Length: 523
Image: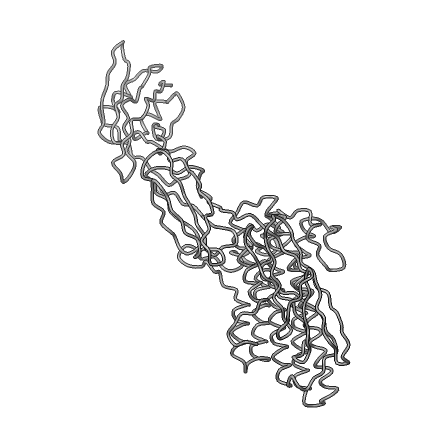
């Protein structure tokens, strides 16, 4: 292992997690649900390949004991208990995924066959309730919290009982099995469980659980290789060889390129091998070859080939490999948190993200206004300058290259007028009892999601009595004594008019003229 460098498999997992997290910020369309299904299928393949690799590595320890005796027993025993603990938690997570699917689709679902999940057969991929129900539960008692505890216990076992003497692997395990909320801070104080699974579509929750399985198997792989190195690479002979694939870019953008790695598991430096793809021969170094592939067409893609090598007897053997990937259009998501327009004079919060791109690599610009970032997670406050339109343009750095991700146009409107009333009396009639109890005039926003308040600053009360119109004014929101007497003296059946109502947006100089309201005096 190269000290301090990420392996291609680790890069794959980091990229996959980034893609999943970014896509959760988008609306859950059928296209996105299908993409998640393809990601889950790729993760499932990685789980199988890595599991086979680890089992094959474990076979080396049995061969080592047969050839070297007591010299290899200690490391064989540590390898076996590591495998047992890994299988235990891997199976626990698999049972969780199956429970999620069967809860959503029913016990007879065709998506689960002999303990394996077939993502394309899941019926309710976009179900938003089952993850909350099972993984979060009520009062933080869902199974995600139990999973968290089990993974931390597994990590402690690896760090304390198996690799306490290797700082590089300890750092790798701590990084890979990190369960902190990446956005946690002033604007996001949720725990890992809520951040990861709250209102998450079923297929996303299944894929995220598969990612944890891959992380655990990768930790086991590093640990087994570390234990194997303690015996000595020159002491063993290879008894089994298989081809495996590490595809860090399971999903790539159109126009971008990716790179996968194919390698021989249980590999020995003495083996001379080469990879073949599409008629090309690619040399292998240290049992690994980098296989380039392109994202020229939208949709699924696949690369297949083989690895040839000479075994201990000098005979040429061949191992086939295949990996899949999915090409998506570069997409920009700008989601107004409150409405589909911006309002002048208030804070308009939005969330902005670019699928497959880290937020630190996203640059935004706005016309006719300002955008202020809130925290590190792609949240902004937009403050328009004038009524009309504003444009938000976004660029992103992808593979070291600046790309224009698009422009979105938004309308800028004036905040609508509030509705005046006699302290909530909205009907067309008012009783004498209500008139004696009401204190004045209020102006309230109806069906407006922003936290905005208007204060009435003046109004006039007019009452028609004996064919004469009498009027009294107030320079506040409260009735004056003269206004109150005018209303209480009004006879049953007469009309009371509240006119010349002026209201001001609280904390500003924005004064609005509000329409007249009238009431008929009842008994």
